[in-house]
Length: 435
Image (cartoon, rainbow, N blue to C red; front, side):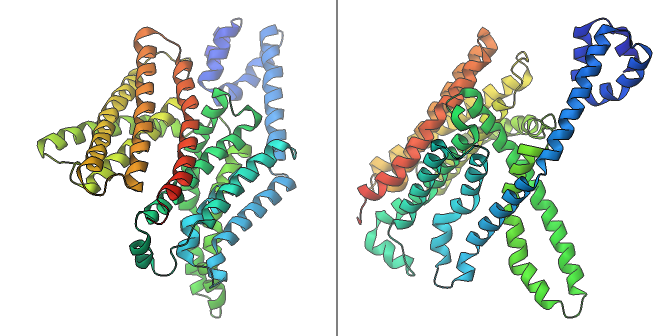
């Protein structure tokens, strides 16, 4: 690195390229070069730049671990863990009913509050919190199945499926609302929405890492406590409550690390996405072949149809995440062709699933049940989203169109899922009211 810097000492562009290529090595090597070439105006500029960045990172690191941030983190973690444990603390709360309708209050609402607390108390924050609480209140006020779920299903029929769909779609709506809180007043901008998608990928990875570390730590703690005579109460408390509180807090801690601590250059997610994109392409392509060879028929097999729907949604998520992490300045490459192939095969799978559910809805006596309406809607949404991705991606690769057009399509489509989630959650229980 030292030789390369010396060769580019009077070429600002080459120095910038060397720095971007390996920032750590550049910063490590630069002081000795500057000491012997301090008369260079270019190196003097770089000296000021590197010193400023170093001081800025130190200030940022110290402010990240401020008392305010730590207290906020602890309060949110304790609140989430306590809410999760409410059925344990109060026997009168039915755990099945509670978790079906309030997991969003445990895992999503704390993240909304975390992002909103970065801003001063404003009308924007009040509106977001009000919408979130209204959605949760609505979900909790829907009729309960009670202790005898079978009797409820027999009496109210399709209405139970409408309830289940509301329980599934309100969390989707709240997740999208989290994106609005994340972006703040810039939530309408494409760049802010894409940043939220990138954040989700990193959040999943860091939460998983924290959970793995927590599992190892908890196993060690429980083993050590087991060897201490008289520590049975501590052992029982940690096993019953301590692990739960720590596990529930991992998404909040991961959010804090990503927001305040982790260097933005250290991103694990893009590398993982590049590994899994070809694997998913192979999986979807081989799956299509196996469907033909073994004559599997989603038109008659409900479970098989559900598997196709799940595969379509998962692959759509992977595609969106991969595109969000792509470098805008890079020319089309092998990974882009893989993404196009993955989008095409998934469109075929989604089209098969959509055709199958439409066929089932018109060919038997059950007709349009709540589940079928929900699946038809989400299939149409996914099909439209994937088709747009395929079109814009193809234009970028083969017609040299702007990559921003693809991002605008992805980001601009997100509100469609929020609208659909609200429609399913509100309209289905009304349409199938005690039928």
